[in-house]
Amino acid sequence: MAEIVSGDAFSDLFRNFEHTAWRLEVRTAYGVANEDDPYRQFLAGEEPDTEWFGPWLRLMEEQTGLGKRVERVRLIDDPPSDYLRFELWGTPFNQSAGEDIRYLDRRKAQALSLPGYDFWLFDSTLLARLQFGENDRFLGVTLDRDPAEVVRHCYWRDAAWHHAESFADYMERTTAAA
Image (cartoon, rainbow, N blue to C red; front, side):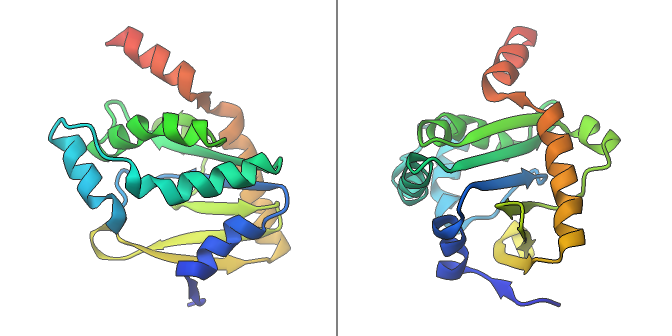
């Protein structure tokens, strides 16, 4: 198996890309240690403290402030899992920092034959496939610059982005249906 990149080396991917960082999120839960307490607060019906979110949001503000694009498509179920509801709660913070996050119904993603794993694409030249361990804990990413693999993932990016809806449209549609 390829080497897993994590910690500062992973964070550097977000400091060093030139134009675009794009992610497909397919999981219904993520075990990120610094989110454990805010997630518990959210599940208890409390407003989570956002201090844990600060480093990421500042990094995104910095990068998008340089004219770079950071985009994601999140697969979502009806109804969404508890964790995806937590992500919906956090999306306005991501957007305020300059990220564009869109939502795609999981059934539509399956019809599009999107992959069943998370990945980032940096500048359409570097694929970073996310790796997870026990209890959905994020381990890091494996990196791949193979042109055939990158192009295949660019195709999936374009298909997902085309069919996904904006956060505002998703919220309007699901709130109106409730």
